[in-house]
Amino acid sequence: MAFTTDHLAELNLLSMFNLSSINEGIKVHSHSASAEAIAAAERLYAKGLITQKDGGYLTSLGSETAEHAQRLLSVLSSTNNTVT
Image (cartoon, rainbow, N blue to C red):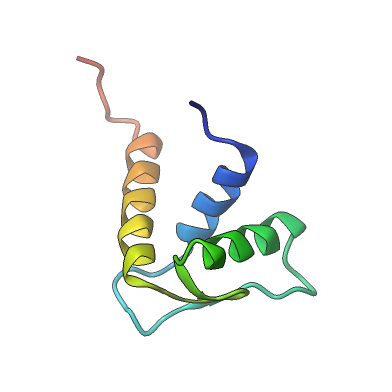
């Protein structure tokens, strides 16, 4: 199984959340965001990961998922990883 373009758009959106503050959400503006970002927000909302169709705050499941997504991005972005 590979990541689809929809998965990547959702992961990108999850990576935008500040995990150090539960009181900080995001807003996906329909007049300025890409169609991919708007659709990703709607899918994340439908999956119960965010509180609003256009962003909002992370739910409990969304917070856990965003943490995993951000860790994955960090590992994949690191140049110090070695294959053992």
